[in-house]
Image (cartoon, helix red, strand yellow):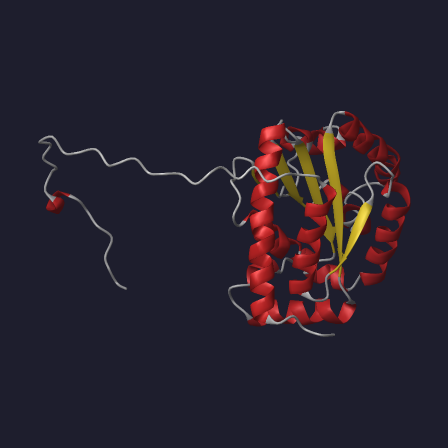
Length: 259
């Protein structure tokens, strides 16, 4: 596999991030409602691409939703109920770092839901997503695909790197021993939920840098937008001091300057 030149990657990423800012302004101006779902294997790079997408964007317009384990109360709700409050209002884009598809993946494979709950999800999920689309939501779904060898390599890197070890949960480790079961679950999930109104887009994620650029480029191509970048701003002159005397600087507590 040919690696991307680092200089080219950084330059292309910067260019795409400028386009993402343009897309953000278009979403705000046209009051669009955008949902982007990120699913895939553990260590496939979902978090990395989400970080690059949001890096230069306004968190009031583009926000990330990464829900934890359901509470006892949430487990008694309609399954999609805990996700509905996080859906966007007009002028917003929401990125789901894992989503309602937990039921088709980890919950099903690990036995956290019953067979009937799983089957009901496969029946109702396409209808739920069609409802979202009919309500005017632009729904985009990405599945990050990573090979067995590459996942193993990334897991080992996380084990060795103390700043990344938090990314390895007991569930991630257990998923390694159930690789085939996760493959079967993914294939069945696609069979039911790869619908015309909201198709799945698969990202080849064995190369993280290429996956980021490919995903962002595709996202930009899915939504028609125009450049609404405002004209250059001229700063007004600073207010002149008309006799106000500030308190002595010694009255303030400063952070120690260790660097």
